[in-house]
Length: 235
Image (cartoon, rainbow, N blue to C red; front, side):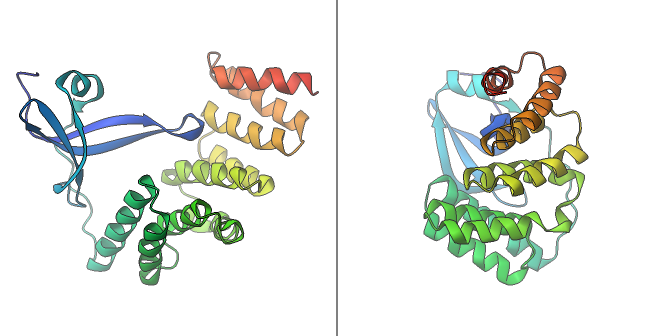
């Protein structure tokens, strides 16, 4: 058990679909020999809602103590409510409670119909319920949202591309990966993902072009190398 443990906010990095990485923060406290992870409120304090329990060894492997959070820009009461609803929807999605997630995302959209995370979450909740056409409609509309075209939304474009690819909406997926690449042209994962969409849509030559760039950026990218083998077999 760590002798210098201090209760507070801890952060870990998770690998998402397609190799994308995301930092996730929890409030961590001790309960006997266990370390209890709790979800955070918007202000960075604990919600008291338990997410997971870890042994001391597992805790040491996964976490580093974060710096005190920097003050966030002051949000309006309406923006705070939107964020809360979206986070509740995301928690339901993590638990595969798709109907409940849909309810939370729709409530967020009543406050702001252009909320990017709420729209994306709604599309995912439809997909989880096998409501494919409704999911496609939401994803297509979101892909045309010019408000997304900002550097901080690179990951959103990538995740949206992944969602579109799963729905076999390859042209829309490629468009969103292109947008993400325009924001960050040095990310090998983005070139790999666009190659995957092009390959599945039968555009093998184009897929090879983007795969080549992905491997040039990261010569040890195993998934890209494996896909290149398939692409070359079908060239």
